[in-house]
Image 1: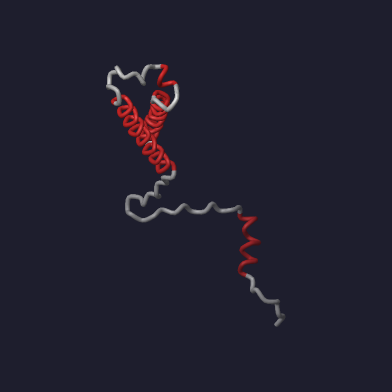
Image 2: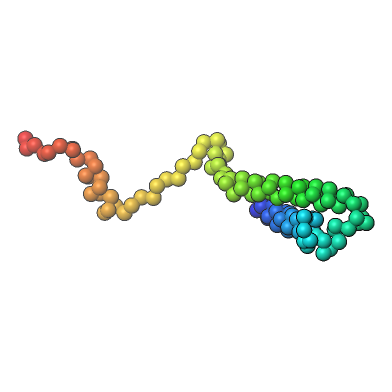
Length: 121
């Protein structure tokens, strides 16, 4: 289970970094970081509007992957395994530790005494 959690954390961090990079590369209304790297050029690898579609779709996929990893980590964090029923199927209950004989004798005597006032006979 620990390996699966570690794998989910790694995928979550990589998808978060990918989303950050892709959001910064997208062409906005003004001159932003995407224009500095040439993503706004019409002669790019993906064509005039192809890069915007490719970047936005890739960002959506990575964001979805990020949310799925976050949900998975939340569910794994709240997972509590149930107690084993043992070989025979009966639940094994631990026996309480016994107190020293001197300390438990007055408590046992007080518990067995009648609750009402003592009446002489």
